[in-house]
Image 1: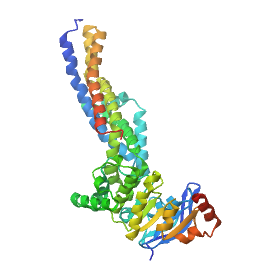
Image 2: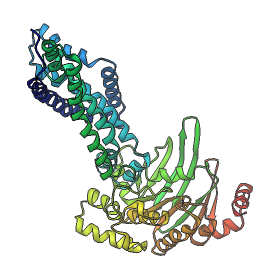
Image 3: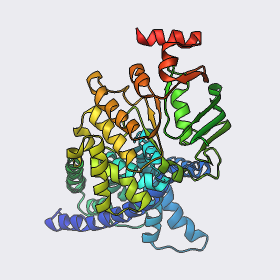
Image 4: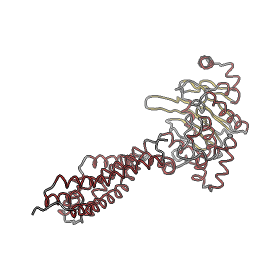
Length: 216
Length: 243
């Protein structure tokens, strides 16, 4: 039955943002763990480790996130393993975010000149000490803008989790449209709510950049 | 026994042979100036001594340790061999103090208070004690290079390598850096320096080594070798740099 778009619908949409936020948090946390490992493997002195990480990055970047969600949720249940949507989403998003963050952070690590590694090595620092005290502190400054950029993408990509049953912001918008038949207003509200999440992040990234003086 | 001993060292980058059977020994307390055209292998030679460049043939020995042996602990070796680079290579995210104390605290486990005292002491040697809390980007090129020297000295090395350390400096800043080197020479530090400063080489070095086409072409006491070159190549080189 079609009814009017009411204020209560807006509240429902706002409430649905909690799933968007929860999915983003899980994806970013999982992606950070995977991404850090990938980035470190990619600069490792051992070639087979670098190759393994590279194959992983290419495989994930070349496949849709949607496919990974399907594999973990529907695919595993076909072979008899039932997973909760949370587990499936956490796995798929960690794999996806890990590949992209890993590649971003590898670039940041490699943007630090070779000579900084050499200076550390010639003072007797080990590979991990060079990373920890010389390379990573400088790479973090470079990493902030692209990392926040990816995080903003991630917030919007959590809408894909609707296919495995999450009623997050975009899905809630679809449901509201179905009952009110006011797609234009509903999706404008949805877009405004995404903007309210993403815009402060971008602003905060700018401030952080200034504070760590990236441009030094 | 010599402190540094290179025997028939060969270094290739792909098809390019940079060091073509270099042999050279350096005794404790010697100051060796390595001169030659760019591309003659001077810097590569220096970088082989502390294992920054792997070699394809021959042997590099420092104080009885074979540097190019895969089993050698390069970290231990590098605590005894300091190197200063043309481009300073200070850590831009760390203060002068932390630049100097990083290796002593992390590698040698010195506590922060003692390390700060050490930083003061080595900065005094290069005349920059008042800059202890500054960041590298607030310093002139000459000051940055003196901090880089202090950073190496803080590890109390037995040998110091200098890779064209004045080449990136404005002419008026070269003097302050060379003065620090002269003082280190007076203190008896063993040094190998790649340099284009012929006046400095003549004045401070005990021996001059002329590199040409990846080989030690000619070597001998500094003043004599620079005044009376025995090979035509050194003569040509000297007349090119001195005019």
